[in-house]
Length: 291
Image 1 (cartoon, rainbow, N blue to C red):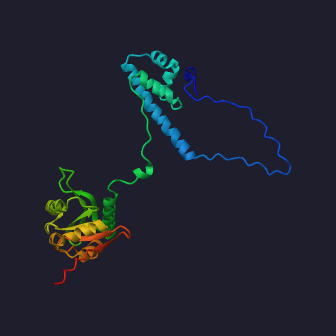
Image 2: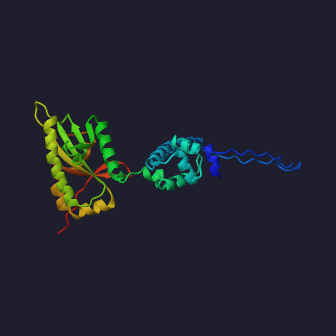
Image 3: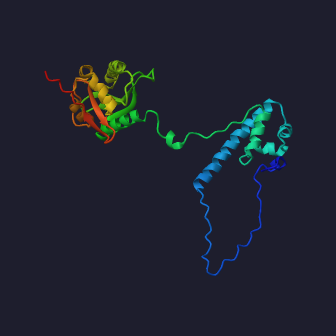
């Protein structure tokens, strides 16, 4: 532990010790194995770099807070038991090895309590909240681009309102069609989702006029790509007439369209996305009950 008087050096003190000879081993004893201290040089160097960056940022804050309180470096040092030169080094960003208790004392003296915490684990932060939704969009984008069509992630339908967008907009110049592909990982309000689909198709019609040429506007077609989870299957099977009315287009034909082999059907469609195989599958209509 540093003494406050040692802060004049604002660095770590190195202690030297005299090496003691190892005790002699009996002739029959196996040689003593020295334990290797494994280190992660990448983490160590990255830690040192980040510590310097943090010290620079904190040093600037200490300097600004001290000036606001009209304190001299000596006056601040007297409050925390440190020399003026130590405060100077800290304010110049050279305090990466200053003890934690000194930073805490500085915060108390300046009325800016010091706070520190570890961030969330990187592994959990790597998976976004909408990962399931993004996975469907990623798959549709990859399919469209692999077949030579232009695909846009979150295609804006109203430039003046960034909140209005299509999950994936696919421009099929060969068949002069703008496909509105909506990805559904889960449903909160099925009726609202259907109403939003109508709005997006209407707004996409304006885009279809803009990308058209002398031959006229592109045709607009819509498709839902739904995660094939047990919950979603049960939900859609519960309302077969609503789904059939909202999506009259052939589901099998839509799978073929998204895979780039034929023009979009005339009616809107709904297809399943199987996350276990990362493939599209047609929705099969439930069989009518026997009379």
